Image (cartoon, rainbow, N blue to C red; front, side, top):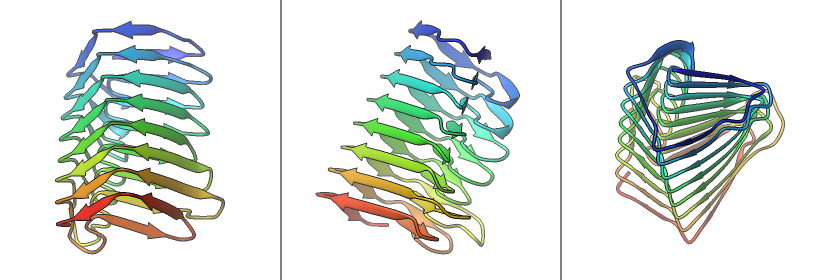
Length: 212
């Protein structure tokens, strides 16, 4: 798809479709890249490891009105994967029908931050955190007025259909949900809606958790 190394592209009304790569089938952002995207679509992109739609490493990404649909990853982050202190701001974005073999069918954070406003996380699949997964220390996410619906954590270890958090080897792993709806998600083992482990901390304010 597109490779950015210490770069800051601005993209509007672009489509990334049917691309493939080891990391970041649709887009790969490395080492202080700062892409800004508006009204872009990532569809049916494939990564053999991390970030089927988008991969962020030590980068800052800003997205508005973007759609990630049908992307897949052999590791984690079917729609989007962020690592090594990356930060993502997403407004009015949708992650629909993405998949990952391990963590975060929709979105996966590994020691990274994310701020989601008015986003839709729908019908994604993974073993852990089908909708959204954040692992290890150094993860901080804020989710305002977001909807998690129809996500499924599959397999005998399926855990955290809507959302999964684990501090893993240590450090702070925090998420704050405000005005969010977490509904009709499922996990084959535990935590159909939300699953929290190993010292992670989440806060829910005026949220609805139903039918999981």
